[in-house]
Length: 281
Ligand SMILES: [Zn+2]
Image (tube, rainbow, N blue to C red; front, side, top):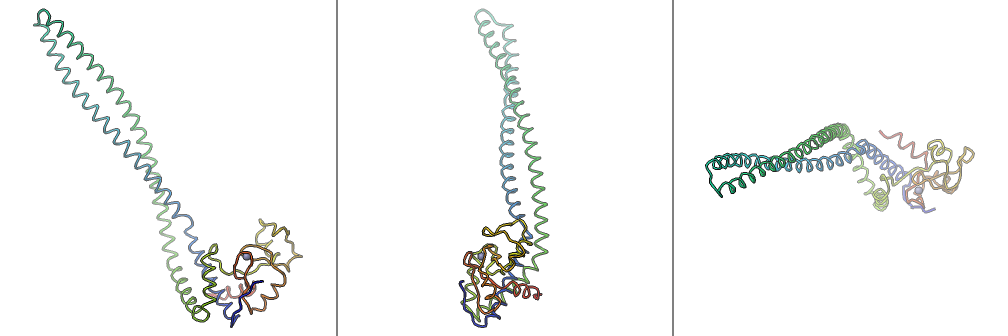
C-alpha cells in the first residue's frame, strides 16, 4: 500500500478528517439547490426561443394587415374609377366605347382579384393569430415556471447562505492551520479535493458487511458477493475496490496516511472517521 509518512500523525489525521467533513457538509448544503439553476437556465432558453418566434409572427401579421389595408385603399380608388368609366361610357361615341368598356372590364377584374387576395391574406392572418395565441400561452406558462423556480432557489439560497458562510469560515481556519503545520500534506489533500468527484479527498474504509447493509443495490465488489462472514474484508468507500485485509490493522495504528491505489483518495480508519465526525459541532 502507498502510504504518506507524517509527523504528529494522529493529530494530522484528525484535522484532515475534520476538513473533509466540513467540505462534505458544504457539498451537502450546495446540493440543496439541486439542479434548479440548470432547470431555470433551460427554461430561459426555451422562453427566448418562443419570444423570437412570437416577434416573427407579430411582424408577419403586421405586414399582412398593412398589405390588406393597401388593397382596400386600392379597391376604393378602383371603384371610383369604375364609376367614372361608367359615366364616361354613357356619353361615349364610336371607338371610345370599346376602349372604355375594356378599361371598365379590367378595373372590375382587378377589384375582384384584390378581393380574393384580401380573403387569402385574412385567412393567413387568422392562422398566424391562432399560432401566436398558442405560443404566447406557452411562453406565459414557461415564464410562470421560471418565476416559481427562481423563488424556490432564492428561498434555498437565503436559508443556506448563513450555513455556507459558517462552514467556509471554519474551512478557512482549519486550512490555514494545516498549511502552516504541514504544507506538503495540505497540498496533497487540496490536490485530491480539487481533482476528485464531490471533492472527496479522504474517505473512511468500509467493511464489506457494512457495505452490503448500506448499499443493497451494489451486490458485487470486484466479483465477490459480500456476506456477514466476510466482515474482515474492507473496501475503499470512494471507489469500492477491495483492499488488503492487512490494511485495516495498519489503519488502526493511526500513524500513517494511506492512499487508495485505485482512486487515489486518502484512506482512514472508519472508527476514527466516525468518532471525529460525530464529535464535531
Ligand atoms: Zn478508492
